[in-house]
Amino acid sequence: MRIQDIVSRDPEVMSGALVFSGTRVPVRILTEHLEAGDPLNVFLEDFPTVTRRQAKEYLRLAERLIEYQVGEEPVEERVVPVGEKDRRERAPEHDASSRRTKEEKEHARAA
Image 1 (tube, rainbow, N blue to C red):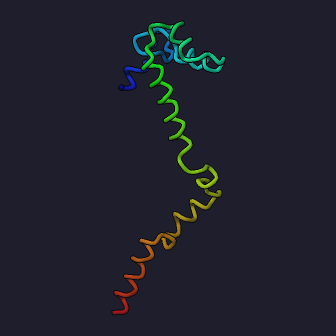
Image 2: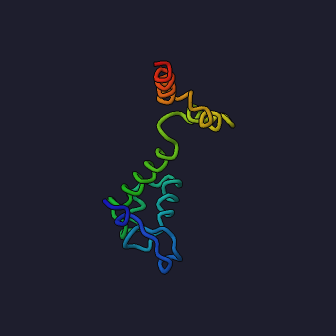
Image 3: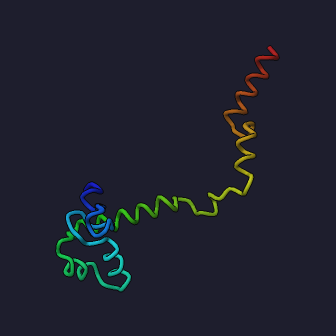
């Protein structure tokens, strides 16, 4: 299912709020129902213009977005101390491929 089939935004529909495509139902209403402890079926009964597939795909998209934002490895392992990134970029000899190139150049000069 394409994202355009799941959600849409139009300044003339619900003041530009993100809605389920083909409806006037803002996606935040689904979030509010779930936060209140309502099962998905209750939301779908309250808003029959939203299909089950749209609601489930929206939740999957939200999950994938969060996974993408957080990444697969723990955040602590991705954090680079302040200044460390700059130091790494200025010192290419720390990169294995750069080190080989430097060694190859020295070998060529010695020959």
